[in-house]
Amino acid sequence: MNDKILLTHGGGGEEMGELIKNLFFKHFGNDILNKNEDAASLCVNENIAFTTDSFVVTPLFFSGGDIGKIAIAGTVNDLVSVGAKPLYIGCGFIIEEGFLIDELEKIVISMSEEMKKSGVKIVAGDTKVVPRGFADKIFINTSGIGEIVCKNISSHNLSFGDTILVTNKIGNHGACILSNREELELVGDIKSDCASLWSPISELFKNNIKPKALRDATRGGLSAVLNEWAQTSNVGILINEEKILIEDSVKGVCEIFGFEPYEFANEGTMVICANSEDAQKIVEILQNFEETKFTHIIGEVTNECKKQVILKSAWGTSRYLELPKGELLPRIC
Image (cartoon, rainbow, N blue to C red):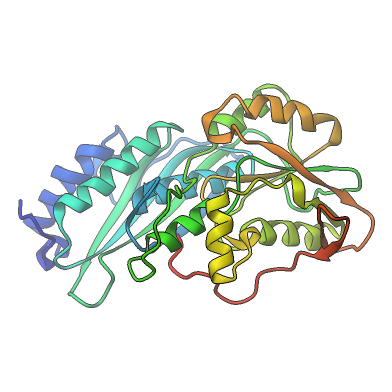
């Protein structure tokens, strides 16, 4: 096999067959995918969740992950956010002519390793190769199917007295991508939080704890999730700024470029709304997992300032935490 992607790898002939067999099937192979049909025959019950996403992150490789890991983790976490066990993924690759086969294999291996953490399988796929200059190295599209094991988790469920939690420090992924981009030439030990969260969140379900709402805080970060919840459920949300965990290096990046850490993307951080009586149990359970060891309570749902998020500072002052506007940082995931 060649060491670079050629247009013939997307032509449907011998070269494409070799790429699929010797690379994709080698790392993604399972009893469904290996049948090599035009569509996968799946066994699922009537309670299913479906999601689709596209991944165009640059750089492709960064501290804590790569485009392949994000593609799997992002799809898994979208399913988890509605109480679904991830089962199957369909995956499409758009690859630019000249892309190194070695780099493609690194991405594929990373995807394979990430799938093992949740047990999800790639069962259908597609590969397209475009001429040089018509894409930026590689884009990945995914569609995920999961079995809903905890029903009626929704952004419409928030009510007065509920507790808001976050499973990680915030802003790490956005700060990592920003500092990894060549033209910025930032030096720092900022690692993306990219991770699949099925294992820790499913432990809540096993312990008969049902969150009222879950959301993976990706583009728009914590601010986007909280504002969406406040508007959808017609409630106010009060957040204690002192309680939000942010690494000093992330704060530094934000100060340099004038960004809000609350608006920075995360790729392995779940925002949770739960009944107040369940909040401490959630903290205790999730802190047993590496991916969610920083789980902490940050605020509550109120009857005041409906459809608004209020951020209370350490000095007793308050301000609105507004919905992000514009494109904060393109090509983030």
